[in-house]
Structure formats: structure tokens, C-alpha cells
Image (cartoon, rainbow, N blue to C red; front, side, top):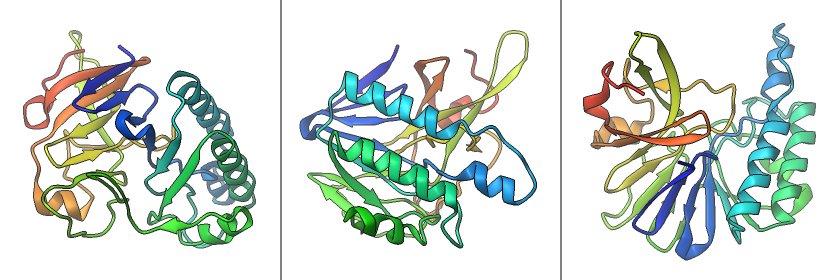
Length: 238
């Protein structure tokens, strides 16, 4: 299935959470410019991210027509400066989004110099942002939020390892959903993800709270409910 709806929100195979009441799409961790950063370190990768992300965005706007899009951090990849590829790709991506909706950007730990790029488009970079009960943060720092908030965050790049009936193992990106937190998968196809079936949480928020998550994997253009995180470690079948 392409989407799973719970309460007033929808998880989609487009790595996007849709908040129907607010006509808002939420995504995380684009890491634009990744190929340029890797090339500067001697590793040549095919430059596929921009085309891939634009394809996702086109599908989202065609299917859902959101009036607002929130990106919860790490729009760019390089920590220490703005790479040439980042300038070009970020401007093209934000121009596409703002031509179709309002854009809200949350600061991630990779977004140190993003303000310089955004200033050319008159966009603000938020440390956090609230729409109704939903509180949008990146998730790389501790954050004290109210008990009635539904936190939507990125940073974790959640994934799980799944074993099939011939014992082949694949790692798939996933959404994590608890009563108070939704963790989004990384949009970047190069962000392989933190395999939660083999390790611990990265985000200090998740480390501190230890929430009980339901897992929804994205696999071959479908979104699949996989059950509780504590029950699927090395035991789930596709």
C-alpha cells in the first residue's frame, strides 16, 4: 500500500508524513550536496539525489497538494561550509517547493551555513516550529516539550533489518510511531540509516525517553506495518 492513515495523519511511501487537517507535508534529512562532499574526499558517486528528491516532491504535490511543507532538518550535508552543489541543488529544491506551497525549514545539525543560502530567498531557519499539537524539531539535541505535544523529528535515519524466508537480510528505512513521537525516515537515498535492530538510538531525545515504537517500513514502493520495534529485532519476515 502507498499510505497508512492513523488518526489525523498519514504515513506515505514518499518518505513523507501528511497532516490532513493542516494540509501539511513533513519530510526530513535531504542531505543535498552529499555527492559533492564525497567527491571532495576522493569518492565519486553518481549524482542522483536531486533528481530522486524532485521526483518524490512531484508525486507528493500531484497526489496530496499540500499547502505547506515542513522539512525537519538537514536539508544540506556539509557541516563546515556551503559546497557549490549544495547552493545549486538547495536553491532548485526550495524554488520548486515554494512555487507550490509555503515552506517551513527546521535547523538540523548539518545546517550550520544554510542561512546564507536561504537569505537569497528570504526564508527563515527555525530551531523548532509548532502547528496545532504537532511540534517539529530535528532531534539532535535534548528538547523539553509539553506532554500534549506530538513531536515530529528526523535525525535518527531509522531503519530495520528484515530477514526473509530464505534468510536473506535487507535493511529498509522506516517510520517510528509512538504516542508522543513520530520519527521520519531520511529522504536521502545515500543515508542508509541507523539499523535499530542492531544498535541503539542516536537522538538524545530517544535515548532519554526510550519510547515504545511501532515500525512502518518502506519497501519496493509500499509502506508496510511491521509491528513493535521490540518484537521485530532479527525476526520479521516480509
